[in-house]
Image (cartoon, rainbow, N blue to C red; front, side, top):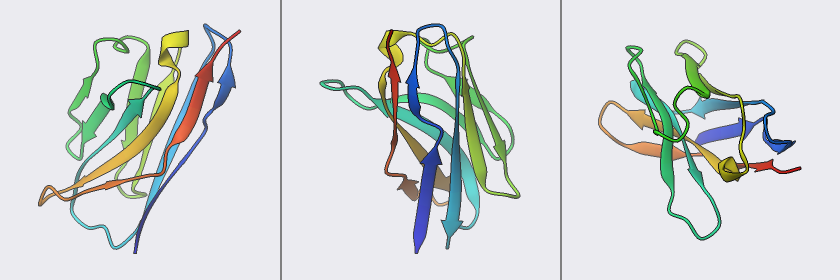
Length: 116
């Protein structure tokens, strides 16, 4: 019924850039926020960036100034522009959608590897 599909992951060198995209489809109504989370091997899943339908944003301290989240509410898409990538950014990145009633959905994830 509900599907979130991430794209844009891959292998990049330190200092490089990637742009992640997430498309939401299916029976998802009244979206209140969309965001990106990541999980590195042996680490807990953490919030990377989040944006509400009203445009408010928040970022993890580790990515602030380097990553930018944006969205298209009409198309139900969210993007993550990642610049100045570091090896510690290596992780599986997951798209998340929050409904107005706080029900959440997750994508399957896309792998970002930052390595020389």
